[in-house]
Image (cartoon, rainbow, N blue to C red):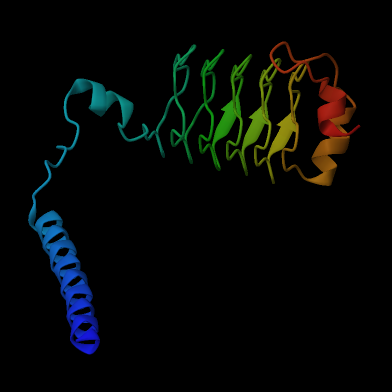
Length: 186
């Protein structure tokens, strides 16, 4: 009799275990088969403004154009004529200005953090109080530029450029608090 009771308990335990496996499998199948509401992709003016593609002014003639205090993050200005353009206090973070010309261009107080400003001809350009931190300025020429208070922290410049700019470096950037000479490593 004791042997029969042990067999019954063993079968009962196996049956309970099998029942739990079936219940768990049913729950998993139910979860996989249940359609959860999918959130629709955002639409409307707010989304379009927030995620609009950056403006592109490549190869454009922007002579004497006014960009004062404009939001131009990651904008494209490569090969553009920026002579006489006014970018005072503009946000040009991450902008690409490669191979452009900047004669009498005003970049006073502009934020050019992480901008690509390589192979640019700067003549009588005002860079006073501009932020050029982490910017790429390789092969850019600086002739008769104003850099009082400009912040060149961690910017990539040619050695000859740094020597030339150190001769005229003065002031402290009003936004970052970093001296121009310190940012150039003079």
